[in-house]
Image (cartoon, rainbow, N blue to C red; front, side, top):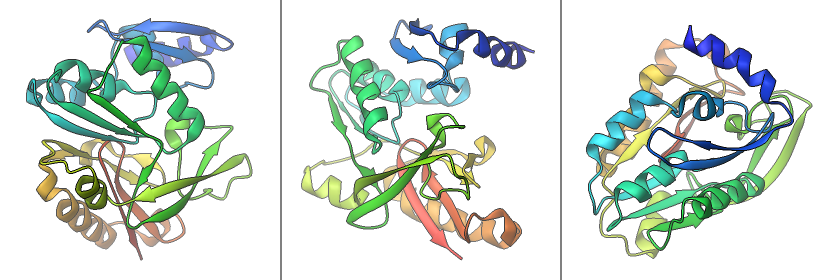
Length: 238
């Protein structure tokens, strides 16, 4: 159907640098094949339509939003536009992807209600080794090299969500989107949007439950990752 047509059409974009406009009027600078996975913005003006629709319904003028793993900025731009009296804190730890996030913020004329951080959120303070892959879209950045040889390693600063909130004296965070990844693949059916106060507990509990149900070989190097995606990161070893 429509998704198949977009996948076929994506190959026609290789070597292109273009500005894609969403159905909401937001603009995004895209380069292919580097930005594979984002072609739906160009072909249909949309991305993750179900999640986008829910977030649009929940945001208000003064919302405080964390976009963790902001990538090129789809949700950052959306949140900043829909919450002009609020603030979007965007986190993208891979430097070259962070530059694309900044570019798209500038392209949409976003101002002080966006705080962009080249920073990872995780289980502690320090640094995290992240990997991108020549043969995968940059949305597949991972803390594992997945046993591949086409990776580039990036050393990213890392802190915890709670420490960031405390240091920035942020009084509240309205929404947290928890994404679940199995072997570096997001499982959309398990994604959920929760209040920040519930995010850590819900993420860890979900990890524990799924580890009991999914065979050990499904976990890359014995790890299951939940969170990430947009707003929170949790990691459970097993």
